[in-house]
Length: 128
Image (cartoon, rainbow, N blue to C red; front, side, top):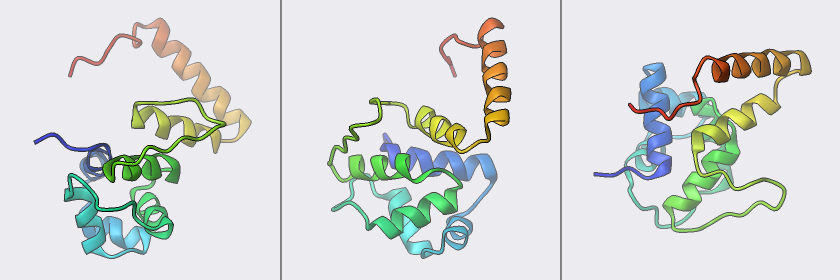
């Protein structure tokens, strides 16, 4: 079974951090059944409420924008934001949103790290 973007996002964060649905629910102030529903429903009947998506994002420890976009996609709705370029990889969107929250000094550290990875050949496609 192919997972939708929201399911992939939730699964990735659970796997990365060893979290359960209950952990995410507690961190985000939403119910475990809501987290379970969003993580297991291939197609959502409607886009969840803003407060639900904010709680999910908080529980997952990621910015809300990629969660909103992924949930809308899972409900068959396309969201367009005029002031942001179209990003098709939610992981890239999370990285961009996260870096924007860093201090200028920390952003410079990230930029140096990215440059060194690119110089070392880290720009090749991930084959895993």
